[in-house]
Length: 281
Image (cartoon, rainbow, N blue to C red):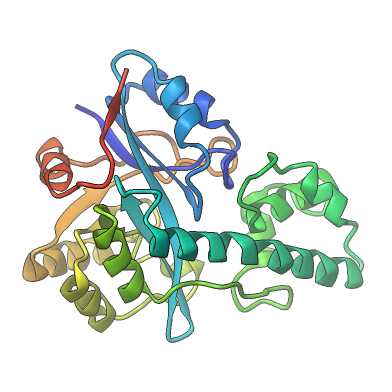
């Protein structure tokens, strides 16, 4: 059984619609796929309606968090999307992304880069979570950079001259809210230091104490030596270990199923969920 618990559709910063994503997942040989768009659940229904035979859908989201000035992402699976406090946090993060993106574009334009807000909107699905990848795509289309990766490395990276922060919930609060909504909180790519600063082990301990379910260890952005330490830490804290692709369609080189979650681990996760059911065709 091939299980990929981290993918993005065009409801956030992926390049495929949620419907196309689940079809791609099945074509890639997946048996289980999680849809985890940034700060939104807007792709859930389309993914469920298009689900091909033989594929199980895990409905989820990737929640923007921050602690001590360090950004991190929390994957949340099978939570109740109507839970008031969790929904308020998702909506706050979603809404704050718009003025943040507009400010980044204004900075880039002021520095002489040929980009406008209209060019970014042209790359955004109506109602989608706007983010730096959409700005990166506009920069690619304008010929400023060859691809998203270069856009982030040269212009859009954390702490760079064009960086603008946005609202992100404290991760301990996020873990508790996901649990309160019947869901499963998993720390996404905790060792991805090339993206910027990462939190120390003391933060992971605090998250575990708050109810964290697992660490996403097998992810291309976690270096091999970091994966070994994360796996050991998960064992020390009684956390499960997951793996996933973080697929974004053509927006990133990540391929569906390139990292996966063990079926026994997946079963142990699902046993803990009460907020939403798996969806099977």
